[in-house]
Image 1 (cartoon, rainbow, N blue to C red):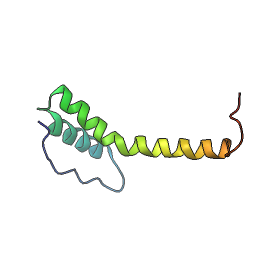
Image 2 (image 1 turned 60 degrees about the vertical axis):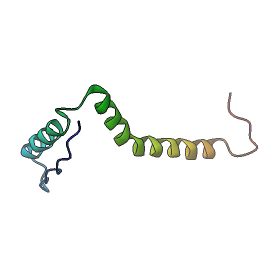
Image 3 (image 1 turned 90 degrees about the horizontal axis):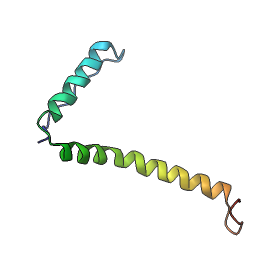
Image 4 (image 1 turned 90 degrees about the vertical axis):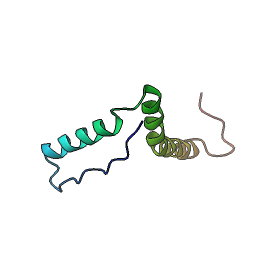
Length: 73
């Protein structure tokens, strides 16, 4: 079970105490989660990053291989 706990407030200086707050928040959120729940949560959180990477790759390929040009060997 993943607990719905409010994210900690991080100071503008981002101190070691902020790191401790984040680690504690993360632990409390996932302490009762099963392995599968943890995997599902990681995948859910990673999805926007994966989509952004795929978009950048597609843009790069469009620049490197314009339409009508054969792909490089």
